[in-house]
Length: 182
Image 1 (cartoon, rainbow, N blue to C red):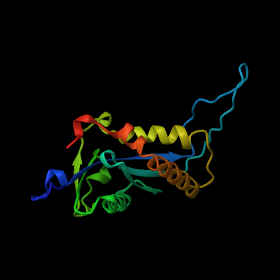
Image 2: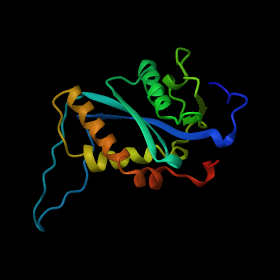
Image 3: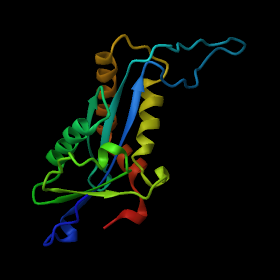
């Protein structure tokens, strides 16, 4: 982890929240509408293909950055940090707040110059508002579905994320926390 570089003014800092989720064939089941007295059927796969969606949001500026990967590892995290870096406004510096997954603290992690990583305390997922969009994505886009391949899972995850970030009011309402404002 690195420390906020000297000379960075607080007014030039963007706070980003980062997390990742697994999406796969053994997905979520959600409630279904059905005629009273009938029993709705929901498909649930038994196979084990999955992929990971790495996502980050900056609720103060209503923007997000994500990548989908077949693996959750340091290489995928490096790609995700590059994607976040590309979304940080020119002249700004991002503080990316995240949990302490192994690939977040790996020695081979390449942190771009316009990003500082800030770990959350151990065992505290409730402090990371980036957890909330995963529930929304799974409930609105990824539940009660079947997937034939990892590529199909990745495409569905990307479509779900793009729908989420194209609704900036969702980013602000789900991920804005009063105690983390500059």
